[in-house]
Image 1 (spheres, rainbow, N blue to C red):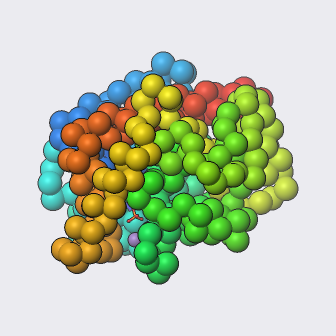
Image 2 (spheres, rainbow, N blue to C red):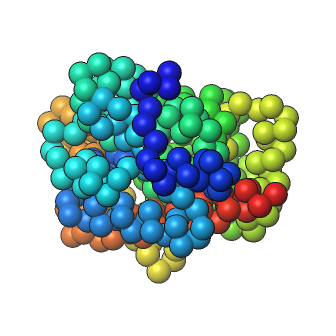
Length: 301
Ligand code: PSU
Ligand code: MN
């Protein structure tokens, strides 16, 4: 399997010296955020990780190789090239066979990070069960059920069916822990009416839970739900209105499969006049900060 992987120099050194690593996904760069703020954000979050003494491992597929850590040049290429695909787990063999490039979703990033032995991963929001279509369940959830990595996210995107997403997590024994919150954050909003099964208020408590989860041999991921900060959140009325409009438009245009999530995010950004974009960027940074602190503390033990 090693032949499909390529590690950046920075990541190689960190592994050699047993220094902490933080996995970062790349679909948010290739399909989640528009140019040029996609590249700006990708660079900024890598910097945040380094400032916390943690090596960022942005994962993507570049010309048929799974990259664990990207060079500045590679980051630029995947951010600017419109031909770059969106790869979930099932797409990886095809992308490699054709020597194509792709942003990796949370699911695909989990798959690759797990092979590389990385234990902590930060992203924006995970995929979930889609509204109005119970059959459209993001592969993010399936991969989370079988990949033993801690994932920091701002809850599930408000474009999803949140109660059904929580039910899926419960059925598949994926712990979800609220960081300083009792309820599920919904990406753009810090809280919802949906209660979480567990809450912690400090990083040491997260570390303890992770240690026990791993010592028990549990093989699922652990989600850490980190709410968007109150300064950055958007009122749920505004977001809900934008989402309902975007969903109607998607239906009319018959957009489905892997195109639906990027379409909805883009529509919401247009309707909120870019406010959702700023919120999106801020919450990703917030998650990378927490992910880096967590990776650091785990490696100190
Ligand atoms: N959240 C964002 N922007 C994104 C995504 C999530 O703010 O681009 C991406 C993530 O990479 C996630 C993917 O894994 O969307 C889920 O896609 P799907 O719903 O097709 O599984
Ligand atoms: Mn889907």
